[in-house]
Length: 547
Ligand SMILES: Nc1nc2c(ncn2[C@@H]2O[C@H](COP(=O)(O)OP(=O)(O)OP(=O)(O)O)[C@@H](O)[C@H]2O)c(=O)[nH]1
Image (tube, rainbow, N blue to C red; front, side, top):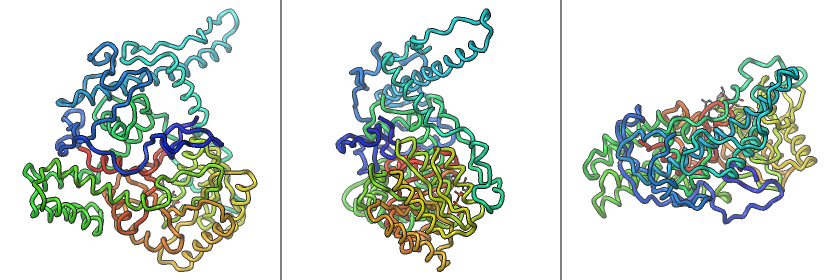
């Protein structure tokens, strides 16, 4: 079994079927929210100090842990909080939810400590072997699984669980990308190509995610996973880390959106007059005219039927936003974009200059390798001098081969031709194609792109082809115009939204879904290799509207 980052669940390795019935965290119809409340003002800048209304999140699904304890009874010793877990940062927190979050935290901490002592042990051995015989100290007991220092944490993972966690960590370490690209990767990639620009090198890989404090961000992340049916023992550090970064990435959008929303909604029941203010708020957040109209119309109808208090207003708003994001996903033939096993998958990255196509491709290659898919990169951006080099560096980081054409200004279609041939010969599952950035208004360049697309369809009619428009979220409504233009030339099937970190225009995701009718497939929230994940409408909307 490997952890499939596309499905976000442990999955059988290549050659094994994935049972469709297994529960997975997928961007599907939103889970029913048991409770919902208004956003908590004041938590934006100081989550540790101000209370966050935990009721804003759904009741976590009650999933028994492997040792049989349910989340209602996280501690075999009773209700006392684990000693190593600090008291909650916020007051007034739902105790049941908090206990569940504590359980997840305790497990992650134990896993991290187990992994740490596991990695330290071989180092001690290695050092010992360098020491002259007489001075050599006795090697540490090889079979003993170190007892975590927070052994009193509840529920304490069994030795089997610890060992499994260690194995998983080791496997992750083995399959993880190299920290730095190997020196030869810095060599010019292709014959006459000029020396690589300094900017060609992607940022160094982020270190393994570390467990932070038991704070508001942690409890929010755990709750978001729990609301989607995750058990406490299925919560992984990397997902917590990602959700934290997603929430942080959407902070700028959220800050404007949420504060205006709270101001608009106030403490009184919603009135039709408030809808005008809400319209302005949504349009300012780049949600787009169509999505805004849909939301307002739904709210209007609701207000005609009953009195709606602010908390219900927020819940209803979230539901509407999720619905808009979900519609194109559910209408596509694939509710979840995952490379199909035992089939050639070709994913093209297209878009205007500098939006993050190559970076996205590098992150996807890493996601694919870590999820156990065989992958190959086609460096079909033959226009920009350093592009092939940049792609090679990304390929090296995940040990993914790169097919490139050494001649300057080679035909991108020829590179794709070679790549598909190589993938067929090697039985590769996923071919990621980097294409040159182009303005949607340049007819000849759009024609060139259409040719690449035709070549793929002709050469590999059996392949599952995806044409993904990479959009820089910070470009707001401009991205929408790009989507419309690229749709016809490249036969777009989906969108990757990048640079959500640091952009106040994350609302454009809704405009893309409602006006271009394109499913958002992945989102990027940072330059690091792990800063990309499959899009999940529930998490996105929660992060957008979390307090
Ligand atoms: N902050 C942030 N930066 C990103 C993200 N994705 C890409 N970038 C940065 O955006 C810049 C351009 O990325 P590239 O991947 O080279 O963009 P491109 O679309 O391939 O560029 P062209 O090939 O010139 O069209 C780089 O500095 C990336 O590190 C993201 O999600 N967040």
